[in-house]
Length: 210
Image 1: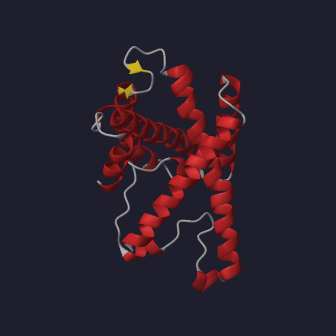
Image 2 (image 1 turned 90 degrees about the horizontal axis):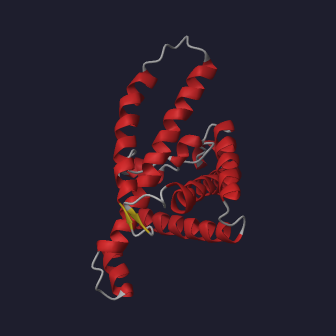
Image 3 (image 1 turned 30 degrees about the vertical axis):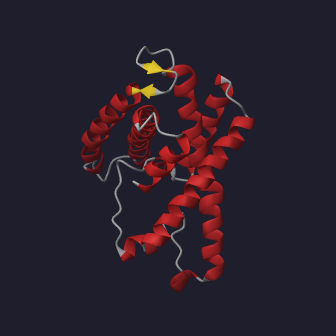
């Protein structure tokens, strides 16, 4: 199970790095292109009811149990036993080719909007090396999401479906902002503080092992 999780994480990182680099080439870092990517990818994810996929750690935790690790979290939730090989393959292609790619677009657009336009002018942001603002924002958003989550679950079952959908997507968007800022903040702080005098290659290797 540990090997499978490690490979899954490694391939996921490769896909994210590749996706980010492709997006840097097109549509580039203009504010209108970043905003357009964010709005389009967010809208599509909400339409297919998959926007909650943008929120992950630190708000969701999966333990390394056999059932959790070997049950694919795909869009159509197909399994070999009940759905057959062809449907599982199509589900996997759609989950990674469409849903996961849209998640990457959403993260990239918001990440770079913060880098280039939203948080860059802040005094506590030093050229994206010391993003203390992101760390603070992440924890604020986490507390808000946790506080709103119970209220969202307690909404009257007879409530209008549209109202519940809008409320759910608003909380999901806050969760997305919490996760993105947590990653962005810790990532930048680690770049700045994690053995800064060590050779870069050795530094990265030690970080990876830890």
